[in-house]
Amino acid sequence: MTQKKVCMLGAFAVGKTSLVERFVRSLFSDRYLTTIGVKIDKKVVRAGAGEVGLVIWDLAGEDRFQRVRTSYLRGAAGYLLVVDGTRRSTLDEAIGIHERVEGEHGTLPFVLLLNKADLATEWALDDDVCRDLDGRGWTTVTTSAKTGAGVERGFAELADMVGGRR
Image 1 (cartoon, rainbow, N blue to C red):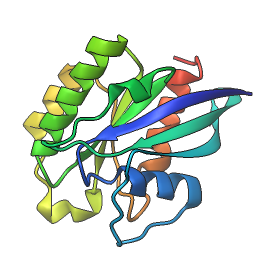
Image 2 (image 1 turned 180 degrees about the vertical axis):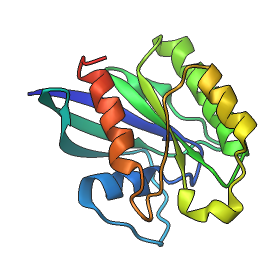
Image 3 (image 1 turned 90 degrees about the horizontal axis):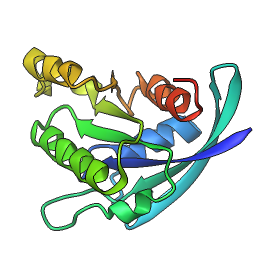
Image 4 (image 1 turned 90 degrees about the vertical axis):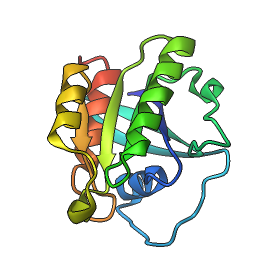
């Protein structure tokens, strides 16, 4: 079994840590804890006909005062880019993060997670936005760390990409 380093990237408070907790431990907490620096977790997942050990680096969120240190991506096989579906501005921040990652590390496999689907009445991403993402050729998965919807699928998509199956 191979092990692959993957990173969680996105704006401040989009649910990166909650997604990791849901994926690795099947847990969710309404209590918000800010990630400082990086938190590392591991989980073995199926990728194609085999397994891949994901070493998940959960990086502190980006905001206008602190930019994600893209040096954390050295050695990463890919990343999950997380957006809060109730805050349109987090998609713009995610696009900026993606552009910086590509500029500094080249093209890496990634999956865009549109998180907080459980808050459908507050959703801020319309069909035009989704069509634009499709037009970019991005793999997107709608998720909810709270309910668990789409979480396994999002990580599985990335595992397939970095496990050499795509």
